[in-house]
Length: 348
Ligand SMILES: [Zn+2]
Image (cartoon, rainbow, N blue to C red; front, side):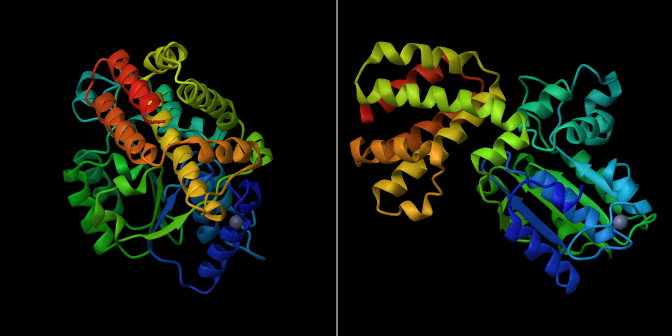
């Protein structure tokens, strides 16, 4: 992946290439984003750049042996870690302690086809739909083994950890050792959609870089992301319409649609709703300049900021967090989303 192939976030590209050129690149960078705004693409572009044999003008050459292998995601010094679970595609022994390596080929294909994939796309690809993927201690152990070998070819061994917030405590303890005393020439690039959920000891070892949301045009160029989000947006706006009109019956189609989504999409929707409500809250608090409103949402957000009760926000955030926890602990989804919609409606 070249920087020129990463959509948006131009100032960030310039910042990173300068850090590399001046030899000031931290050994662990945490890229965060609320949606699929290109953090994986950015991480791949950084990994390609630091290993390129002939970089110039803030861009990888794209033709050297290293760029060629990074372009296909098959460089022997490039390692991926992502949340997994016991998929039906695994053998019985693999199911006991599933790790990313077992799914590497389908993961590569997915990233090459669409680097703007989301968590649910990952689970669809590796066939663990309706399960919660995790990054386990077995994963951390495997990574430890791989990194204790010398770099095969490249300048850096690059480890890309997708969704480090899915790491359990055991994995975090093991990975922390690697982050505290990284093997020479190792670069960790973390791609998170919920950095506040990453175990704090891991998060504090990384330089945190937040990606900016993509514009509507950039989102369209990014493909699948644009396909998923309108559905989330539509359901949320339907709920606001029902809520501000105090029409309980109009919430029915919303909670029914939400309860029928896969679990990961349900959580994604809750995160999306939190992000959207945060924008309304900032706008209502005269901080609209910080709300990063895009043209599509600005009118709706301002309208809601004027209409909603001041107490709505705290209730909404609590209710959404509660819904996420319920999804994670397998509470009946109809009950979860019926409750959520009612609480939101009553507090608007
Ligand atoms: Zn190159």
